[in-house]
Image (cartoon, rainbow, N blue to C red; front, top):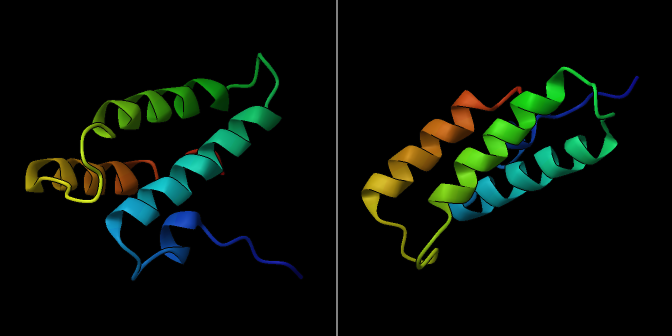
Length: 82
């Protein structure tokens, strides 16, 4: 029996930047597999749109305010696309 591991949980212990990138990539892959009328599509598109606005500037030195928003995004979108 195969077990799906959530990318947010699987990346714990890594840098915030890597965790966000892994989750964003997983959402993009999920979106690519969905049909145009799939109900999950809107949730995934909204999650990707939200994070895109946070991924600006120097991602090697993420300001604390942005880091807090990225952390909230990770938790809020943890099960989107599953």
